[in-house]
Image 1 (cartoon, helix red, strand yellow):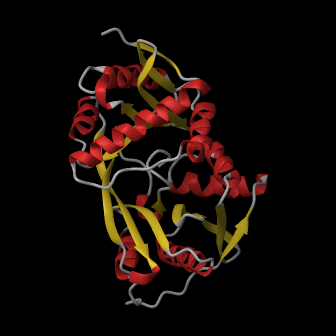
Image 2 (cartoon, rainbow, N blue to C red):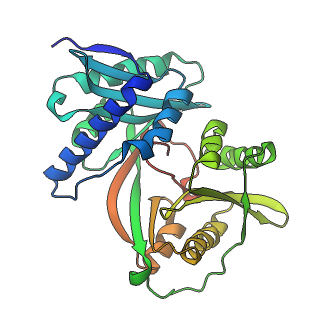
Amino acid sequence: MKVDYRLAGEQDLEWAHRALVESLNQFAIQRALPQVELDFQESLPLWRHFLDTGGGCFLVAEVKKRVAGFCCNIARGNLWFLSYLVVAPEFQATGVGSGLFQQALTEARKSENTEVIAAYTNASNWPSISLYIRNGIFPRMPILKLEGNISDMCEQIREIEPLEGEAVSLSEQTIASLNDIDLAVRGVSREVDHRYWLGASGMRCYLFADGGRVSGYAYVSDEGIVGPLAANDTATVEKMLCFCLDRLSSQGVDSFTVYVPGDNTAALSLLYDRGFKIQELGLMMSSRPFGKWENYLISRPSLL
């Protein structure tokens, strides 16, 4: 089977989206999980973000003029992160995925800036985990997808006073504050991602201050997703998260989703106290440890 690997273009985005949905649904069927529904038009801004800010790192594998799979990664500072490695079901176990990954990894290792190579995968995706380990990318930490809703919410076991956040919009001062926090918590800044989030429809950013100094930020969406969230101080994570949940509730949102690193015990304890339940277990894998994950909630697996 002849496979052509090339850079993706705008015309490939819908085909890549279709391959992702088919792959996720095959995975769901194998594990008796609910089918996935992802609308292409709603996802298009994110696909364009990867296409425009990946630095030419959005690759497709083509078989007889058909997109058989794709690989998408982002480089932020010294971090190279594999956002997606997807193969359409009929082309799996044919070497397409390995070929995409090796091409992307070769480019990552050529860059003088790359110090950390990282990826995210479902914790039961043995083929992906094995592929990454064989290439020096090891499991570092679980990522728990937790969901909760108003009707099942438990009374607080511990009384926590929310830390008030201030809604902010896109400005150079906002970007500077966000970058400072990211450098302290994640070890790298990611201005292009914050510009995307700050301009995204139905998404709001809040900055939190302690003693007049900006100490954290959090994003919330109209869909009830909290994250990314980052705090300079572990003690403020719970207070910021409480604010986000209370703010969403006051705006009529009744279902919430949070992706929590296993190291963030403060957030995990708070959410379990409030009746949240685990829906999915993922793995953050990397060539070496990085970041202060006890101070962080991820936005979504593809952007970490």
